[in-house]
Image (cartoon, rainbow, N blue to C red; front, side, top):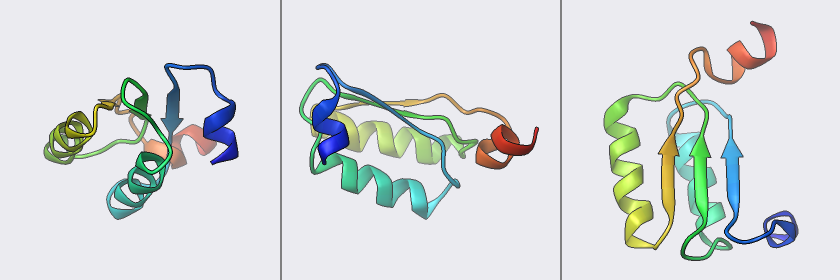
Length: 80
C-alpha cells in the first residue's frame, strides 16, 4: 500500500511474476489500493485469453491493464 501511494498519479505498476493464478492474486491486491486511471503492466508471458479477461475486469474498475508479454516471463528476465 505504501509503495503504491508513493507513486505519482496516474500510477503505472509493472509486474513480472509467474503467469496464471499469481498474477490474478497480485492484481486483486493492487486493485485494493489503485485508483481509476492507474495502470497495471503485466510483463509476464501470459495466455492471451487471460490477458483479455484481466483487461476487461480492470476496465470495470476504471484501471488499465496492459499485457506486455515478455517472452520467458520472470525466469527469462533473471536467467536470459
